[in-house]
Image (cartoon, rainbow over all chains, first blue to last red):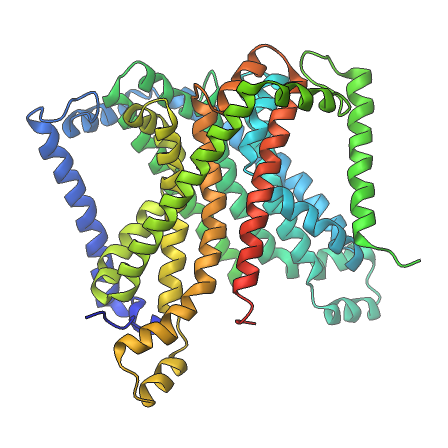
Length: 264
Length: 248
């Protein structure tokens, strides 16, 4: 007999016991997966070329972290990410602000930007490789291009939806253009801009790892590919875990930034 | 004269194309960059080559297969999770956990497991597309207005009737939203896998044209891919708007 859907209110975890139960299930799932992994590979039941032994991966992971092999690639990836974000923030912020100034401009640019946003940006990457080569500049270019759109769109929306009452009040008190921007527009728009920036950071990171995987000479994505191609499964898995951890850290860091910005 | 946004948009696009044309002709090395006018030659080149047309067909087929599978998985898992409290409590957090890991890191694994043929592209596409579908189906089933549920119950509806007449109609708009998000995700997955390694699909020719320094053909190829993505997205978006009409 099919059950009725639990009402959304009841299904969302509330209270300490509920949240504990949800966490317990997640951790239990993780533990079950790890246990399964260990059991499957312990006796060589699975070809180690397909799934490397769990203990081996743990050992390699610790070795990689301890020896600092990853530092050079991590530095490359982080450098590419920061440069891409800098470009995306400056260009996206400027374009977003300029296009938000009049209703007409928003109606012109919104469909343009949204339409381009719907294309998977990674298709442009081969063009950047052709133009910039296989090194970091092509990764910075693709990261900046892909991150540009959420930043520009959210900035445009943010500045475009500032309460006109606030603007009129400031102007009636004799605010100059700069004062208007600094004390009214910017604080009002800030939370929404931060949301867009957060989106941009995440997808820039994914785009950069992706482009390093596809065609690169250095970087974390490239390292994973190198180990895959040499069938060095144990170290590859260790690096995959490493990158996933970095992604989770980045996610958490960015979410906390956004929460801090919203609270203002 | 009333200013129309469409005219302004066209003017901006034309202006950008003009700047590109002039810069490419004056400063661009023809090995690395081509002006927009060269695109016409590029398009006729790639569509004249039957192998490239075949590559587009293969890629499109991969997208279609991945999308179909994503919908099937999304519907079945989504309904199962959404309709049963136990599975929602236990399985849904797992789905969300998996959704949050960056799948691009395990792309080489997909190739190792599924090979370099279409199977890995389809698998990677499904892996991307099924998550938004599951999440939106679960939301559609769960977020029924409690007033509607109570009204149905007070009119004496049994469980089957409530499912058929209250829950499932509520699911339809969310389902189409899921289709739209899923299509975007499937496109991303398939294209990523194609660009990584491809022997017959579109990715094969991207590598070819990059390595042989043929910017016109590469631009033409990329533009057709982009147009394909925009078209598919537009189709699904219109379907979503059409089927969500009763909502608003």
